[in-house]
Length: 228
Image (cartoon, one colour):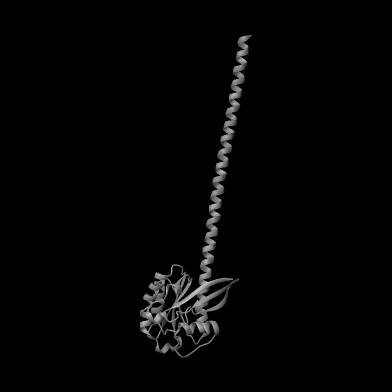
């Protein structure tokens, strides 16, 4: 089974822990949760096509209150969700800082999602969907709106990002296989050309030796004529 590390980053209070709880156990706690357990992580198995993947979903363990997270938390994550609260402007304004934090501390992340959380409070939103989509586009991320009250919206984000990761890896593998095929074809072509050159050289040398023998035979015949 393929294991993938997934991380969630963003300001404190945007609902990261609630999203994880809803996705992994279909539970929701209305009270604000401050995550304090070091290395807190949850697991979820996901099927994409014929592949079964194990998502290792890491919570920020409260570090986001300091506007920074430990490099160990970021390290080797392949999928990152940058979460903001659509009813809280500062959480959206801080997205570039979280994106920079991610890029500074992780060189292995391959798929990024920008998550506009608390869509159940849509009437109280202060950030339009278009703003979120435009920011996501600017960093080549995928945009989702979620509510920790709604499992389907949360699953759509996690599983949509996972599917994009799998598709990306499949495409990379396809390209690698294609490159290896082309490389082998080129090597075979060069080998065949070298073999042809070798055979041609051998044939030329054989004909040359044959002509030399023929000339020698003629010369020997002439010498006998002179003797007699």
